[in-house]
Image (tube, rainbow, N blue to C red; front, top):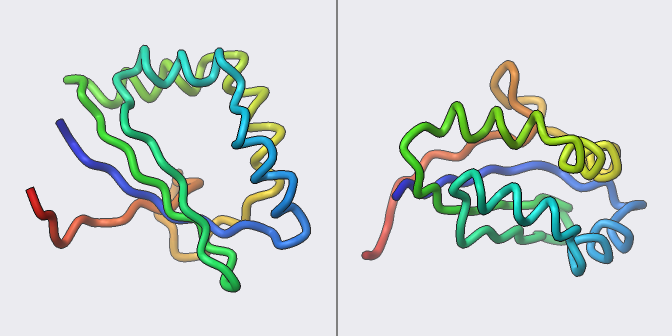
Length: 109
């Protein structure tokens, strides 16, 4: 199992809608995540900075392939088209990233 974390901004004018959408994520989006070995997925919002922190655990053996399957899924792409404009990616993110990855520096097993 691999723990993964990411950070992105949330545009303040979309806060209520983003929270509403994530209170009832589309079942097909959740199923695609599970099929791609993503478990224990959470998103946290830090206010007033409007920074979101996501955490999940990856239980598969080929993250690139599983991640590509998520990205190719038509329902997930529709979900991203809805949520993406509400997000504010960090300028410091790596090339090709939308959510900036975060490095684990401590874990209490």
